[in-house]
Length: 342
Length: 292
Image 1 (cartoon, rainbow over the protein chains, first blue to last red):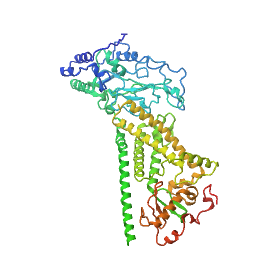
Image 2: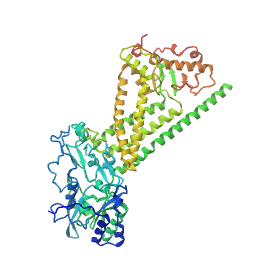
Image 3: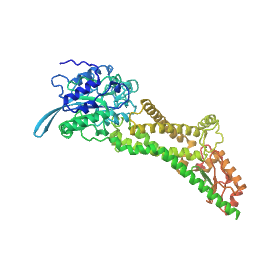
Image 4: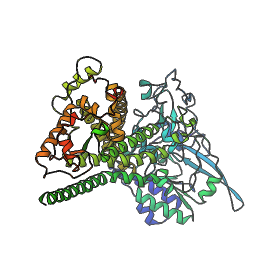
């Protein structure tokens, strides 16, 4: 097994190399130039691109390079798990992956990315695709916006990050995620210090786009080490342009641009995602890729906007009612005076 | 606010229709907010609430969000309306006054048989303090809720400091709101307070109860009645009902007014309100502390 080492690279080199590999136009190459400072906490919104025409799943390795480096970066992220994990009440679900840290074929609290192998039959031929799967870092991530403790938050650079010191592990984020990405590790986290049997059940973990590395001017590990250059990261507009160029060049498809209201992860594929999704079997920790998956919370937005307008409406109603009362009172007073004068 | 004494019915009008609508709109939307707020926590599945008939949706956070927003709309509109409508009209009867804490202690002690309850105005001093507390809780919930709503729709990447502040203010005041609700319910369990329950459903309380417990309020009405007979040409509002009618603000007496039908005017003007005893008042209807 090849040992993955993380080297700090210049974003220009990474991006350029990737483009040269697929041989697209010079304009796109120029567009890929991304100065490192752009990533060093400037807050500029970033996107990533995963090119399925390039990913080969690292079939020559025991573990795909992106998965291995991710594990290496995050190996000490989860603190030691309680020897006696409190039994939740009344539903006694415990999710403990601390004895299966080596699992890499699915998402777990110890594995934030995995490579999904999909055999797709198209035009009478079977083709195999390898799809790196991790958090999509949605534009308006329901996992973050309705986290009851705001333990999950979207950074200005687009990374959706769970603060493991605030998370109670209720798994609400997983329930509202169309891909059920976050994974729970019971027996760790703040809930142990509150009411462990009655509230909370651990901490949720998922890809954070290596936000600490990004803010230090480095690449996310998976993008850094991909031997095929199948992944890119850059300013959102540039990545979207690149995705469009590549998609047109291969007469292919893009996934992630509209799904769940838009995401910061764009997959480019030479075959349709309908076919890819049909060839997938959704399992725990192994999400499918339904095209055009809707952002359910979007339907609540009109009501939410009404709530935002409510203070103005309340004030206006008070003004109207007050004016009506004042006019009515004046009219009555006038009428009575007239009657008294008579 | 319109307050009327209905001696033949042994009633006093305590709340206007607008006040009743405000109260119940806030109460119902507040309870929906409490329930759906709880369901925004991952409790539906864990506590098998989804197995309760009719609550299968309790683990669907988006459905709860719909209901939470709908209730929040009513809650916010009515809360802001209440603030400005009564504020603009100068109705400050529920605003705490100097000495309320001391009198509250005396009143609460008297509820448990310790000492005698002093004469009280329309609103009890502890009612005013509770109102201020509830108003503060509601204000914090509305402000933090608006920040969270804005974040949900327009700015998921809003400053983490602001989001955390709004979230924890919302969570903490959610708990306080629940406790305040329990306190509100506990208050009406106390027997001396029970006659007021009728008031928040019908707008009217028993005259003998009001005279016994809210004698300062009745005195205020009488005073206005007396003044109005002296200045009949300056009524704040005309509402000829055939009943003793007065328009006052709880703490800021309005212009005096008593409007009577010609037939009743001599009868009532010759008497003080407290002299009118309804024959319909039975012994059992008297408030617990009434001793006659």
